[in-house]
Image (cartoon, rainbow, N blue to C red; front, side, top):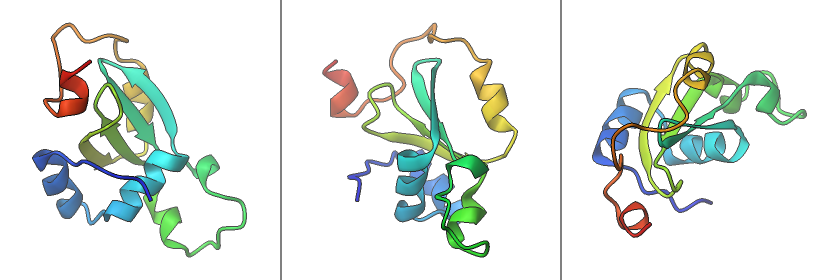
Length: 110
């Protein structure tokens, strides 16, 4: 189990989107990662689901879920569900024009 630090915004969004901490950890562990705009986008795609997962398993409902991590990967900034979002996120600029997106101790020290 991952030790997840969720921002207040991420806690609110995960509750609205019915995502548990286990769901978020699964997306982080198995999803595709892209570093853009000073954050890390982790999205679960159908090809990331383990092969022996039954068709009606909870993990299959997570396809299209994106977890946005701070630049060091220690804090969840937000979560959302949209299958086409990963294509859009991959086209974003590689680096942020502004400073830090996260104020937790991991990012502020680096």
